[in-house]
Image (cartoon, rainbow, N blue to C red; front, side):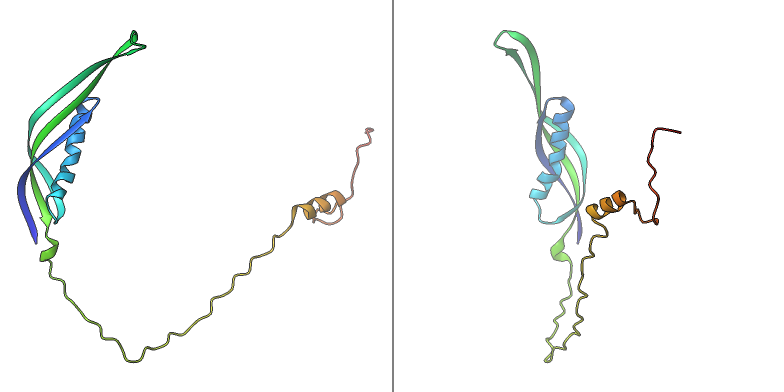
Length: 152
């Protein structure tokens, strides 16, 4: 059921720095191991890494073939990675098969009607609030309006 085996995979990666190129190559180890097996992978542990090739391509770019030259580097690497893989063989798991016989009479489930949801009307519309404020009725009883006459 649970199997452990060792294998070697060849992966490659590229990036604009050394770290990105190596990280790109190591990230593809899992994908490469998964392609070679139909089991469920529980653990992939790298044991040894050997460099097959490491190349840095340097290009100089210039604006309008003359102005503002800049140097661009692109790193690519090919690695052989020896990994120890722990996997789970799904085909080896013994599943019990239970067959349900169909009953001759299907009991009816009690049907409970759903409660109908009635939307609540909006409590107060904007126009009714404005009319209460303009008439002086703000819901706290009748208040006397006071106007400023300019004299103390």
